[in-house]
Amino acid sequence: MSKLAILAQRAGAGRVAAVFAMMVIGVVAAFGFAPGTTTEPDMTTRLVVRDLALPALTQAQTGAAYWREARIERGDTLGSVLARLEVSDAAAQQFLRTDQGARPLYQLMPGKSVRVETDDDGRLLSLRYLAQGGTMLSVERRADGFVAASAPPGYGVRTEVRAGEIRSSMFGAADAVGLPDAVTMQLVEVFSGDIDFYHDLRRGDRFAVVYEMRDVDGSPAGAGKLIAAEFVNKSVVYRAFLWRGADGSEAYYSQDGKNLRKAFLRSPVEFTRITSGFSLARFHPFLKTWRAHKGVDFAAPTGTPVRAAADGKVVVAGKQNGYGNVVILQHTGANSTVYAHLSRFAAGTKPGARVAQGTVIGYVGQTGWATGPHLHYEFRINNVQRNPMTIALPDAPPLAAADRPAYLAGIAPLAEALALGQVVTIAAGE
Image (cartoon, rainbow, N blue to C red):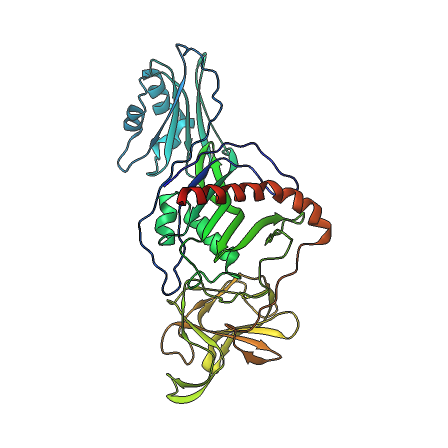
């Protein structure tokens, strides 16, 4: 697996972030491959080397300060943590034991970290600890002693670029290159309208992503939004860029401004399987008779969130005969959707309420005429059921013409980063 670290300057325009902190090129895969596709684990590795200008080295100074960090373990005390951090300072330990402002240090939480700054002799100069409640405890050494204070922590956002080639399972390979699961799922979600990640993937497909990483007081605090992505599936290139509008709205668009979000989700339940499809003749497991099944059943455990397939208005949220607990949404034009057999409704789901696409409106259950927990989903046009798995779903509105110049200027550096990632990925896999 080849790795390439790149440090870049902030670039871009408009409201699209374009800061590239690090690129790691590796081997990443997605959900699965089409029948007949081989998945041998053998792969070639090629080292990619670039010359980087190094700063001039200066002679080390005595009396320099050093920052160290220790992760709190179960059973730790403040004394044991400071010992691991090589703090040798009786005055500091006395202050931390007795000062009221330093009391949060006596509620150490396993998994969190303590950072200290010390000099050559192990004297404590500064200490940082993100306490319960999200406040940052800071201890500073002054000429006349120590001072402890708590304040909201400093937050920062940086971006990372990673790219890979499909060779094996997605999550195992994503873990191997350090791609956060949350970013992997965003990548799949963004392109799910164009790529069937369960059946369409091929060995040799490639992708590159630019995504946010959040920092709290200089320490990583989890992945944020996917900013830009490119996926090459069966030699077809798909690209997506995040656009943040002046009103705070967010959406992903193609390079030419096409909205990548469909007006309707194909499935209102994530990570599920279809147990009964749309059919004009099906043996009903509850009624024990043959009848039409004008919807799709998605198997999922009780309590699984059910999402609104599109923006709409709640017209029904209650019990209806065989449907059990059911929600019916009215969308634009003649379109409506039905969500049946729910165990319960989400907070705020009541007649007259407006919901956005992806909003959780209820939870999978087994109410009504159901022999097991699942969601019965219907897509209706003029109140006539249509197969939601095969009907052509309309696109969401494209980027507004007034936003287009700023959008094109903002995505230019992102497109360059994605292209670079794909080029190096190809070289690494040769």
